[in-house]
Image 1: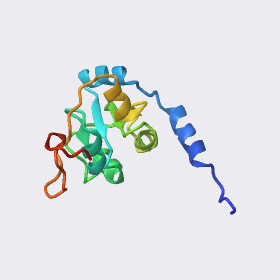
Image 2: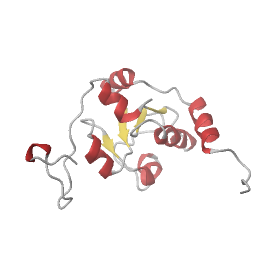
Image 3: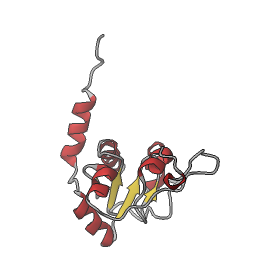
Length: 148
């Protein structure tokens, strides 16, 4: 197989991370307490399986740039300005690095990500809660004897 010009995903990830000042869970928690916007880009099914961070804004990855670009007609009210401090969170901290670099590309100069993602946040004992399953998802709580 012949590779097209460009780097591997590892190269792209490395380049993205060189541009970021990534935050560990405790540092991200303090930044959020100080007014930073924590954005969870995991799909709903992953949030349902892993849990959520109370107060995090849920924006799935495929619409992230449109929802957070303050100049976009599709922006969310929370997208307050290009200098806003935004911390992107995925499950393990890989997709979030690429997403944060993309936000920097559109002008959000203070975008970064959570190193280790939601799983590192949860392991650090920071606030988490189970995500309610959507109606009809076929989910039964563990207390009912079913462990998905």
